[in-house]
Image (cartoon, rainbow over all chains, first blue to last red; front, side, top):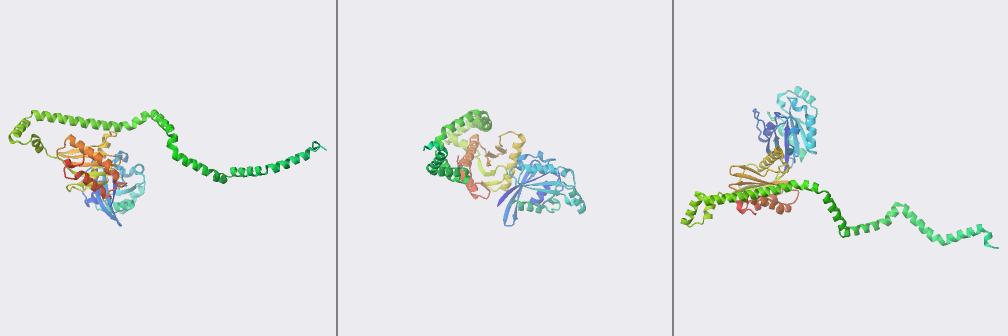
Length: 160
Length: 281
């Protein structure tokens, strides 16, 4: 079994911890509790004939990524950058943030995720995606669980 | 008729004579010229000689050039003293500081112990008890001390926090998660206080301690329950160093969590017998 360290990052309140809880425990809570520091948990996925231990680091949200302690990113194999589809401020600095993360983790897999899709209808979603400066890998809803497992499966598949 | 009357004829004869006498030399010269002007031909002739010299140089390099190289190194070291000190000073300073702190703590504990043992009511009572019951005083002291147990030991990749191996005497929560969280706490503390070349060495809550010894690409964490004296703490840290220098080199690289040998070596080395006293230090 191989183990991979995955970082969940993005601005505060975008739903990183909700994605984390939905993926690890299949649970969602409406209560907003800000993450202090970092929380680590794991889930084992079976990808084809491989078993992959994903060690997910849920990092406290910061307005820009250069505020996150760089040591958290050391040894990571992948980064999930989450933004809130309903709050433009959370994807305004996307290009700068992704450039910064690519420098921190050269060769690592970075997934750009638009969360809270349950709050939008299809046309609203498409309009918003048209305003995002970089291609979005997947849109998710931590509340309904839509695409959450798929996000991690896609990431793990790229890592093995 | 004299030859001097026919200089042109003489010259022709001389040329002819030269041609006859120098024929072989000229041929050889032409051959040499051909070799020198053709890179391929020159290479065929010269390469074996260069190779021979190179192999001789390889064999005798240390004896032939030892003195010259030593002089060069001496000069370089002398000129770079400040740079070298800059590099090793932080590590050296930390080591010395750690050693002095530990020794002072040990000394303080020893003085405190002596004062308490001699003057305290408990000590006087213990002395009486020893006299009347016949039980040795040191045995009475030992019976009052709660022995420390090494409950878990982890070998963790330093940057990623991925668990490389573990051994424990009791079932706790997922050990991969413990390794990840320990690394997160360690990273947070080291990052937050920005103390260069310092590492988190211990986490303590109640009677429970996690001792941490950090190496270049991994760190060892030992979870200990019970009262731990400075000397015992020092011994555990020493045993971690010994494990890193004696056991880790025998484990195939790169160290990986798929290698079960790591956990079995950790178990043999640290957990055997269930108490700190029985670890190999």
